[in-house]
Image 1 (cartoon, one colour):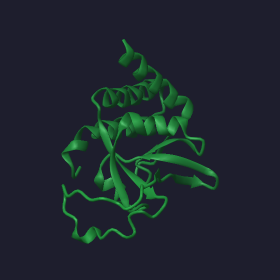
Image 2: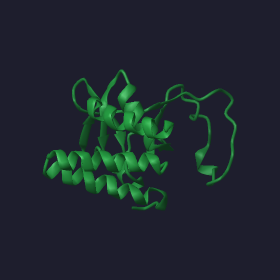
Image 3: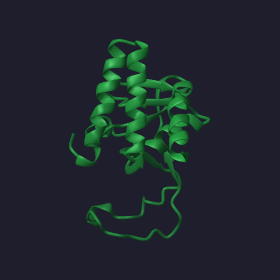
Amino acid sequence: MSDNRYEENKYIVMAAEAFRQDRSRENLFRMLDVLLQRMLDEGEAPMAMVDVNHSFDLFELADAKVGDSFTLKEGARLRIDTVSNEPGVEWIPLYTDEDEINKMPTANIHINMSIYDILTSGLRSERASGIVINPFGLALTVPKDILEIVVKRYEEMKSE
């Protein structure tokens, strides 16, 4: 992985690969446990965003350096860039690191997003059917009914 802040996301990949090879209950629970642990650790992942109102079109990004601040003349509206595995079926991507998000660039804006926010976006989105882990590699889909289990457990644990 190219970025240390995403280093622990390798456990998501390992658990998802194990579940893909053997779709046993044990491997499903292991994958859910890893997702839960990454949320409890306040883990993050890169997220591709679409500039809905083209606020960044006039901004010269070539002159920007990491850590620079800037001001836009109007408010930016960003939307999570979904992916599709068949017509009419969209998924919220969970890219585990920068290498995964750059395999097939789909949006020009990448932000860090908490694993919790990604999973709840997949759960609550009217457009998406759930999440897909590393859509241009592993491509393991996690439907809403499974997401609901892990998100609900996380929220219960945080409220205790």
